[in-house]
Image 1 (tube, rainbow, N blue to C red):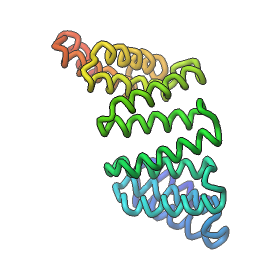
Image 2 (cartoon, rainbow, N blue to C red):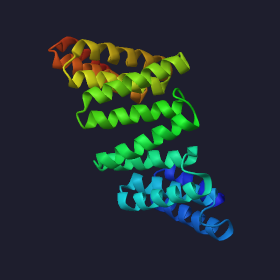
Image 3 (cartoon, rainbow, N blue to C red):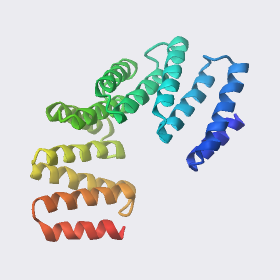
Image 4 (tube, rainbow, N blue to C red):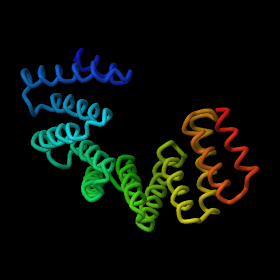
Length: 239
């Protein structure tokens, strides 16, 4: 555990080489004591997968994720939440490589699993709905993306009642979708709602808040509302 915890600290400090050594040491130790498919061993494998993905070593990351997934499936069953977390991680890895078909398969599998394990309005379910929407948006499938974003937003509103950061991310995604379609009025409504929410949840100078400010500035600039765009850019720059 000490090696694993030290690896996590190194990872957070971006000391990736030292983190890799600690994670490998943890895996070796747990394989010896607990076995290669024990959940604690697989948790360490998952940590190493995340590290490789962070480094851009995508082939190694994929190998580790698949090892973790196979082991968790054998130990826990294919629809266990810990399995679904790894499925979701694989989906994001494929998405980052523009392997859209594989990413879609993984996101859909994760979604089916979360719906079965939890319910339609659980945060893990809604986060996966949102992620699948992002995947469709990246492929220019705007109708499918909007349907999923709206489903996620409706679920967040019903389940949470307040605008937490997860919900605000979906609202911001809707803004980007409407902007890409030239629906400036709807985009502005979404971006402004996201900005108000981020200011309240995170504060006016948080990086995510300032990104929302910048998004509004870009939208205003696209409409030749130059004075408003300038105000937004200046605010983002000051932050």
